[in-house]
Length: 170
Image 1 (cartoon, rainbow, N blue to C red):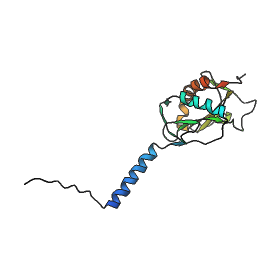
Image 2: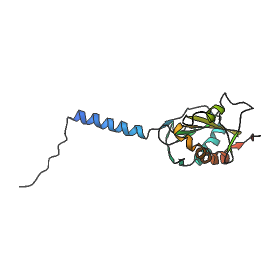
Image 3: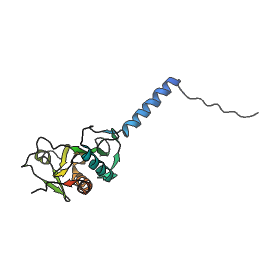
């Protein structure tokens, strides 16, 4: 007499479907895309930004690069949430003026708002490339603040290689 196997799945099929959906949604959240603002950028600047994005490293401060949304966004992201985010074609913040300080990290000029530099080292900060066109901003979550020098060094190389320095710090 031949042996036959019968496969049974426990639980009703509706319950299995709910569990499968919950698992898929949970996994999607782990590797979800980082949203980047879709902004109007002149065609020439957008082309330079795309060259910069192609030149950015796969890892920054040990964090792996991840997908962004929309796919054609002029930005990149690294690490788990909260992610390090670079956006190209932005504008300088309202707090920037002709008297603002210039921070040079490994040969790249950055504007770091004075209040952000001195306050809580666990707080999120945003820094901007200074004197380059187009403008780049980098959002550094508090969890990366202790390694912000590494972040600026690893992103600074491509910034200085791809963007034009139009106004050196004096």
